[in-house]
Image 1 (spheres, rainbow, N blue to C red):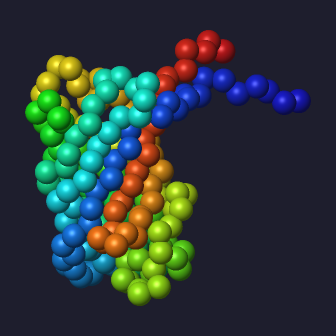
Image 2: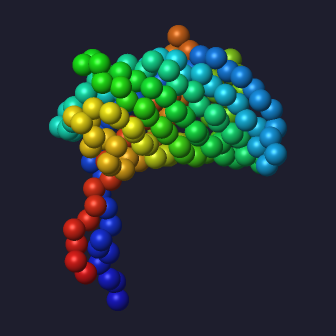
Length: 174
């Protein structure tokens, strides 16, 4: 007999973040056997999608990803943190943690292979959090966001793009 599943959250599209990858600093192999690399992300944008409130558009002022590659080479661990400022001057501290699957097309990007190309969504998933001081943006701080990510190869370099959805709690009573 099939039981209907209830009580699960739903997702509401909310935010698109694009950060530019610039400086790359290889730390090397650390205590747990992972390779740690620091990727500077000094610029980019964070923008809400139509219909999401509070609506805003922000420019990234600073950011970096402390990305670790598992010893077996099959996954990488995202630990991105940054600061952005909205067009109204509101400061946003943003954080992104997640996991990247590392098939050959993704490995080409991290190895800076001349044949690298933009990869589709589906290799990176994560969660996002925000810290804000402005009361108008407090819902960001008090919400949970999950995302799909991809890396775009552009003529100006690499861009990490994430599309974040708000996790909406179920109100089911089963």
